[in-house]
Image (tube, rainbow, N blue to C red; front, side, top):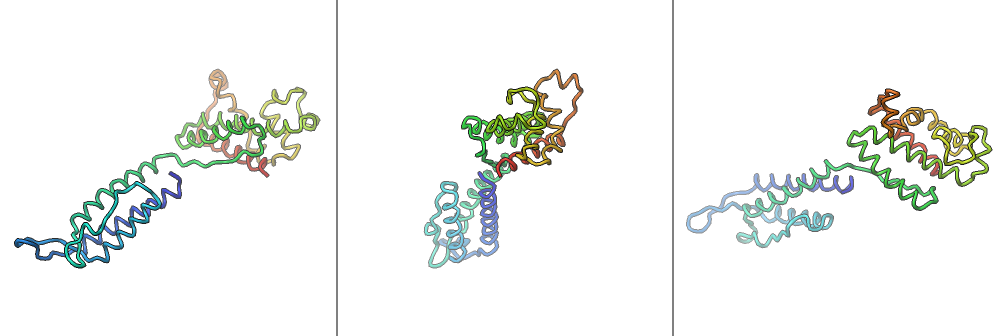
Length: 248
């Protein structure tokens, strides 16, 4: 469920909750058969409820059971309240479960990597970006940092490989002739020199470069690396900056 769908469902939930209060507060007792009393309400409130349920069915098909107002008619323009309140209880219960499930599910965004011409690499980046967001929501900071570093490296490498001879002659280019063997810091520096990305990425990239090798447990232990939410946030921010600059 998207954030917009969740917002709309919450709106419907509160509208039905409000109508439920109306049915309870405006219902009245009238004489029934064999000396009994019947709780009824006028048709205007029932028609409003019926129209709201139609809107819910249109936006969320199959979520609620069908509602037929005519089955609740008592006499003339009066309707039985008991059956309608029972329907609302079931409907509100279903909607509450749906909204709670949507709130507990990670809300992620999609980003296009159209500047990456390699189809397989582009698909990999799109997949990893979704995983990075889920890891951030789950506070898995190491995963965010490692995956963000990998995504940044893949984006920069994809851009540099479009003009390999040009980038090898850049003033900050390392002596290694194979661009695929350049370090992340080399990729960032050359991309800044070539004005593929702005200096903002370079200024924020130190934690990403330092923690890029967290995937190797030995490095984490040997260098006594300490990381948390701030480092993960910076890594994700650098990813967003690089993506923005390369998309322009």
